[in-house]
Amino acid sequence: MEVRIQSIHFDATSKLEDFINKKAQKLARRNEAITLFDVTLKVVKPETAMNKEASIKLTIPSAEDLFASKVADSFEEAVDLAIDALDRQLEKLKEKK
Image 1 (tube, helix red, strand yellow):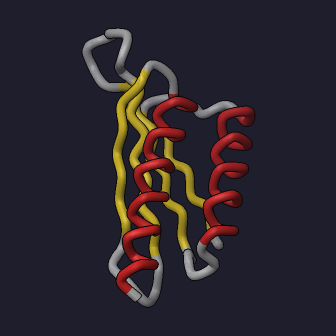
Image 2: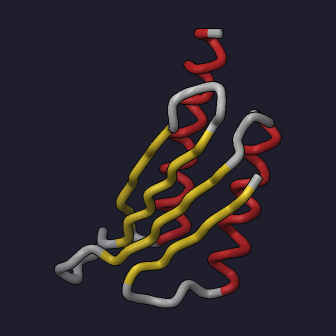
């Protein structure tokens, strides 16, 4: 599985990238069909408390791409929320098959 991390208008720290990679690997263990884990991080204007957005797209060859986007206080929290949403989507996909 390939993990792509894009940070728009800022540089993601290696700690944040490690956190995302760890979460991606955990999700990949639940569904081995995932080929691409594409994360886009951006700071939403104006500067408020809830201004960190994480958008994640999962590419699975045998199904439609799954997508989740969440806004939170920190990027870690936004990534966690988006992964939870994707986890539920993966469960629904598994039930369909």
